[in-house]
Length: 451
Image (cartoon, rainbow, N blue to C red; front, top):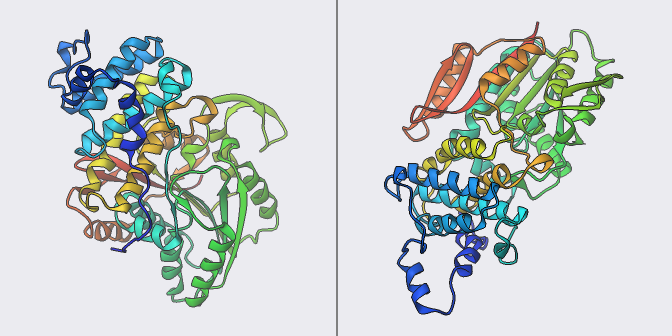
């Protein structure tokens, strides 16, 4: 494991502590109440919550707090926030840290909408997320199968799909800044028929989404080109600044133009989507359709997938997290997020020690996700995960059919998982692959070809 020497970012406890300070005054009896975590005067824990420290109780308290915030019941909201602040320390066990992340997000939401006006002046709204060097990010990604699973499955499917092509054009819609590409280049370089020309087009997202990189895409591209050259692979790199908010329309438009001069048989077109498509808004909206000359009512996700299909790709790989964060109802969204995001908190104990900088960076990125899901609405709410079943239906509606994964690709995934903790698992659902943690779905990988 790499050693890091940079200074520690502010802890989550420091970020939440303004709430604790808000509830304390010069009266010593009040201070003693808080230090001993006594119930708020007049606040009675509902009988159906069970043990106030267990996970189910924490989830129910979060739900009650969310309802109080939405109904503008500031007294009840502050009472529940106070209780949560005492039972969910930021340095506690995995469930306490998870709850602490949701506590902070609810405080941010309450301050934004004015439910708890006293909090507004005391809350630090900024979320401290780390900007990784390329070496740090590569090491960070290798710590867990969360991303490696998708990399390994996708690379296996891509290698089989592009066999025999002398030119491979990879369009990378990836959250992890091309961390998948070096391994793919390594595999391509050892082809018996000799390495092809690789064209890499990257959708450079204009939004700041964790994990964030501390160098430009131009610098990243230069490093990738040099790496490919060291493997005797010629690479052309291009980045197209584009936004998920309009379905990466800049990328689509340029690909459409380029596709007009694409060789019929000599160039493979690979669309690689790794945990990025869920940032495309899924709501049906009346808009001027940039992919056609018509003005139509459609979701950006539907438009994006149909535009990709019209490019007649050799293969489309879609990897994403298997959860549903799309509900417009805060409580439904909170429950869904709480019952999915316990997984990264639970897994982190298996590969990062308490107090390590990497662990703080890892959990800060999870907290960013929680805050975005809970505290924001409308276009500010970027995290809009959909479950695998919904994506499968979307792909089919776009006239794509599943191509599945070969036994060789599956074996590569299994071998990769053997390098990690025993709780990780792999299962096949029809032709798709699903990464699991203690039997719970985490990430899915699917591969598609045009009908």
